Image (cartoon, rainbow over all chains, first blue to last red; front, side):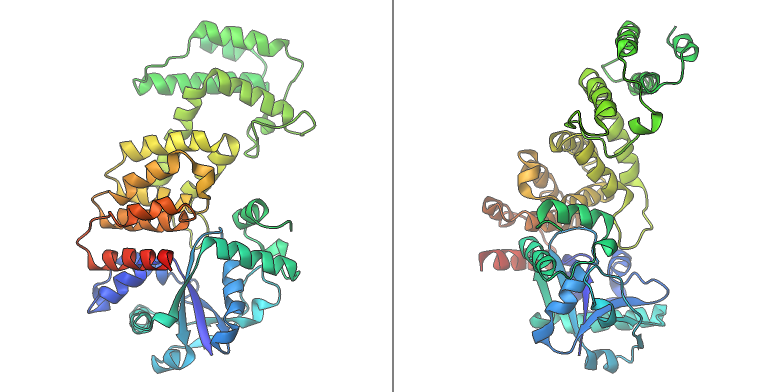
Length: 171
Length: 231
């Protein structure tokens, strides 16, 4: 299984990679990439990389705008290797049916956030585990979801909804 | 004289607009702006508005969904016709007011997680309420004035990523220059991210190759963006 999460800023990946010791990373990077809610970090999962499109659609349709989207992909064995706890609370996305492919890394503490950052650093060393979806591709993906009739308009973020109406096919 | 005039009249939307313009004038004078609002022009405008049969509820004027280009059938047409009329009369004052409010929002520490910031929402609203050209005028002015304030510049960059390059022509690429050639590497990085979102215009690729930095992480980031763009 693979855990997929959106990166707030693509350049943070290079900041993390460049750090010998992640303890010295700027606190803004922590806030941007590891901002928790209820001590949890949100991810979307897929069983294999062939079905990566499912979490990608879920992530795109839980965002607040259409723009380049950078993702980190963490194999589940690495999550286990770092002894991080997870739960399977439903996620919020306008991609119908994707609520069940949501996972949280949970019960996070200050110490565990450092562990998550170390995990990020190790994952970033492998090129295949961080990908970028360009803006035009994001629009294409949204159009696919609309065509498949899998867009839940009521769950669209207000600003994303306006962007979808402006840049994508009629919803 | 203006204050007495305002107090004596009913609280209609056109009065609200006149009070609003008066406030702008006061702000402009406080800021030593060169444009002051003439009292006589106020009274003249008040008379011409009074002659109009269009009286508007206050809330219509405050509607953030007003579009200057609304048609007569549009339910906001009457509020728009007055808003656009006032805007034509006092564009500099209104732009100054929007700019002032945006600066305050850009400087705020936003505690919201995940959703758009207050400043980004303001930028979106300005683009909808007026036009992209007005937005460009405001952002260029702010970027110049606050060229040494990282937070302000980074917020502007991030907010602009949602727009397509065609929408922000001709000012977008020039604004981009101020970010990617800023001395601060963080601002440069945000500028690179914005440029990356606008790479449907391939002419911008040349700019990426001209960014100078000593930070290894930023060099690696720029190289990756160039590599992806050239593939």
